[in-house]
Image (cartoon, helix red, strand yellow):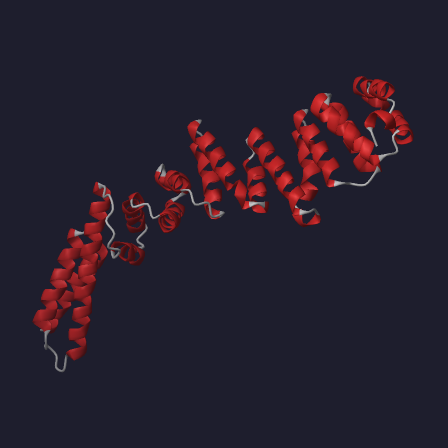
Length: 316
């Protein structure tokens, strides 16, 4: 049915204008709308026209009235959300949108996609990281928007907030090495050494960025996660090495050598048949292991090996 034929357009516009100027008359006008415009399709078209070319406030009033008094159709709810957003009523827009965004199975895929796009755009406009995360939870395609928001925060030097956004994107599986690199390397203390190391490991696995290897090695050594550090060092791929990474690598190599010496000493212990057998060789190996560890800065293990060497001397 044509809109002009179904509605007295001039009179209707007058009543809508009255509603905008005098919101208290909404209840009376609702009675008029219900009597004059029984066709739901007409209301929908009118809301759409007001939203595009007229007053968002009027579009919002009409849409909410329709939602409360007629069937709750996704299209009407979306138009109400857009009207509230354009009028700056962000909280109301989220309230209207949440029932569908949190239960996308209630609507067909086409509407679910439109709703999540609106949710994402609202969150970007407001700088609402939580809203972006919720949009991403519904549709991972919006991860790029989440990363762009992190970039905006970073450019404004809001590094702590940016790291939080990047970290969430990382946990959601975003394959953007820049996000990992910024989070894990800009200020490791800002997110804690354990988190920084885990982020670097995730970054390396996902992106293969060789710049991350040296930084990860340093982080793992600082956390005394030597087994993981040795596994990283065993990877033959070349990477750009900072002075810190070289120091960590040399220290780890010394530790690995000492571990080999300790294993050899244990073998000698197992072969002893009489007290004193192999004691001189065992003592030399323990001294070498202690010296390697001390040179690499592993003072605790170094002292242990040197004390064991002294004990072997007593046995001899």
